[in-house]
Length: 448
Image (cartoon, rainbow, N blue to C red):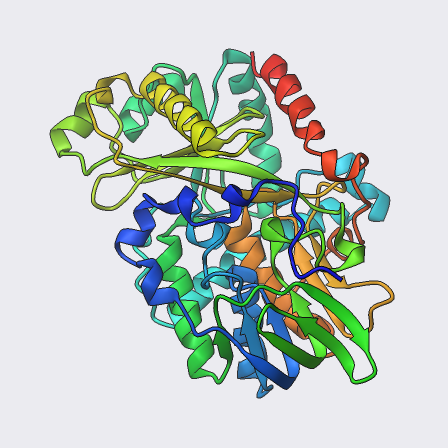
């Protein structure tokens, strides 16, 4: 057995280099999230691997239920996507079409949508119950049409979305965007969906971390899980400096999962890079010069979308999908591309500095839906992953559902059949990033 982790991206991707200038770390620095390294031999009833939103929610739920739980994280809690995302607590996580979902039954599309709304409500409830200051802003989110054809599709979709989520979605014509504070030269209108809100992801993660520890969870950083195995004593998890024996293991590593952690997981996750920049604080005059002053979360109706929102203090957070390669040179090249797209979307802000740029990994599955459930043929091992870039809400929600499943309980809230079905492996094994190249190429054609 090797004591090294095997992954499909180079070591640079999983280092701290891509978050050296992450804006969120100004308010919640890495050091405030670091926890002691675990050493020696330990026996615990429940072990959670991964300290992002999924793992922290699982640990919090388990500890609140009176269970003795330990969580280990390779770097520090919220090191991965949870501490570096765009701050969207919103609908989403499934990319499967209604036709694909109906193979689980005619009501499955509706079940998935109920779960998406429940995931947003789960985070909202946690923020309120834990009294977390997460810089909350935005009432729902606005989908912006990048072409006349996309706008026609949004008009057609408005009634269906309203019925699916039980809300009133509002169509915004191009002439409405200026009045809404959503002006931009590349958009032809939009659709407002009144579910979701924006937040400071590291403040949310730090609040979850503190709550889990108060409830009794033991949390360790700098402790990567190298492998999970069945042993005579139950389950054995090996780290560089420790060996942990547990009755149950919950895996919550998502896009940062090592191929070598557990054979069943190999090839079932496809990490994809996402890149974000943040401007300096802008004045009200600068915001009005662009005609964009709304604090609404927004994203474009295209396959290779941009997503963005103004923070409460007037900084624009602007993100998009990253590249297929990873290195300092590639990171600089992608940062320049994101900056160019930012200037195209907001030409009045071409003079505005963007001192913060970072990148991270979202996680895709071949089923196009998240997974939450047991690992086949590994009694006591559970996993939740595959949020398709919408992990703030769904990662949190499925962390709590995974904790319930691990106790042998029926989930207290809806868990769609599509999410309980194990996703198949991607073809091509460690070369499966080729699928991203194909998807990005097709997206460029369809986005015209």
